[in-house]
Image (cartoon, rainbow, N blue to C red; front, side, top):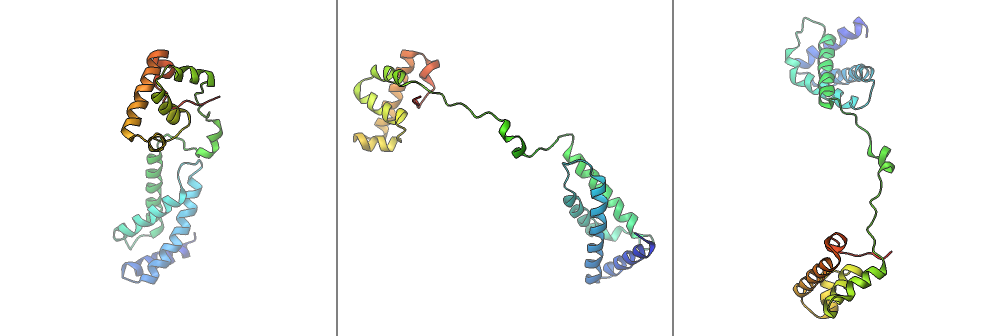
Length: 189
């Protein structure tokens, strides 16, 4: 930026403080371009969005424009504000490194579904009374909802819930809580 540019920005800022809205808009437009270049040169590593810092700087200039001494050049004042806003942005970021989730998504293992063989399911269901066996099979094996199961067997949803709970508890007691106690749905291999 030349001395002529500095003089023009100072003139625009003085006019803006005096109430000239066009001069202020022109000052902000020109200042944004200068600050944008300054900030982009200072940010060498990701994690801080240069445009956010530019916007925060322009907002600070707007709020603090009355603090600029009109007998001094405006650019050192503008760059000081930009520098402080950049420091604030780095402080907010801290020492964390931000990585887009799309860059590492394929490294996450998909959870494996717990599967039980058809023989194991039949063995577990065989020990239940016929009504409980039908309810447990409908909800846990076939994947029907409580409402669908109630409609299928012509009983209330409460009766389905009670029968399902008792049936799963009986299976858990018979085969051990580790294998079936927490499983509310069985999947065939």
